[in-house]
Image (cartoon, rainbow, N blue to C red; front, top):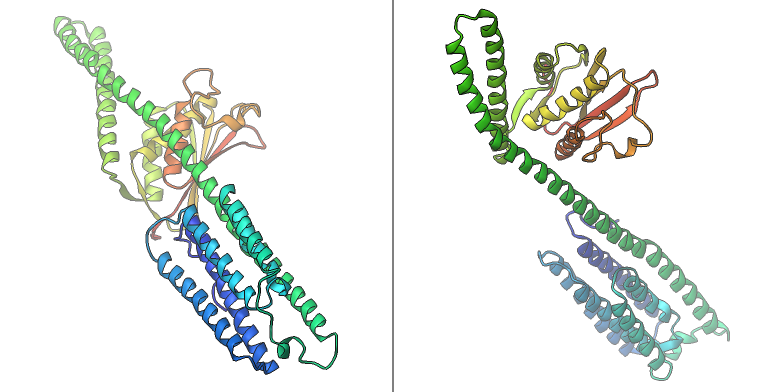
Length: 429
């Protein structure tokens, strides 16, 4: 049984063209069955075999040419697909013309290409297909080649031709219903999936534009902060030199100098992060060690927050990470600490497919009114800030193919679950 599913590497239009070619193969199999039936009926008209064989060979040539065309990288346009359907209508009309015309029970097969056109092509192409089918059907009411008498009335019973006609109509209905139900629905679903993909790409483009706007603002802010920080550093050195004998003041000045140094370090790291991101530099680390180091770093920033950390006992996988992933997790930790500084619970777990970092706070939780808007820019529940931290965390995790889910814990507080697929990871003992 051949695989009737189109290759996943095909575009939507090419996949639909491949399905149309499969329908052609089914029709060719029907023609072969009809020729075999003629042989069993011992029809004397040899020309009937010849004409059917010629048209069947032409149809097989069209199917083979379509196979060769699908191997090319050219996009399948609506106009090209229309020409394929028009060729099918013409060949089917030729087959019906030499097989009894409108009296052939398979004449309603004209509805199959019409249904396909209605499902996937613009209306103007569908009207043309409908017009061509109607003209062909109408002409065959008067102009056609009748079937040989040996085929129509081979039996002695007078109702033989009528019974064969009814049986043919039933078989044609079954075939047409199966083709329309399966293939046309598949083609329409493929188009809907393509539209959904386009919608997702538009959303990603809008999100990237928002991120670019935030990044541009951050770069400008970092550039503008460099000058006042340098000025404050110079003035601080002068003040320390002028009041070298004032020990209490020297302690305060040393603290200010440490904070200025930290600000300069943050700006330097910001520039380094942008450069490493532009070169797509990632670090290969052990997951458990990565999270442990990240939490140690965060505890230096938020020393007043009580931290509870639980880790999976299974062998830890290796992950690919950069500083943007670290900042995404830090944003979630800071949100949890801002909601409640009592205790922040972190749970790290993984399986062969992905790893999850779960962060729970003991704050008031998320209001249902804004739960669906969390992760959008400028949406915040803290009464201060712009809500950009969670938005950037979402964007970063989505770039890794993961997701962030926020929900209220049954015992109070909010749980943020960050899940990222494990791609090409190895388990370490």
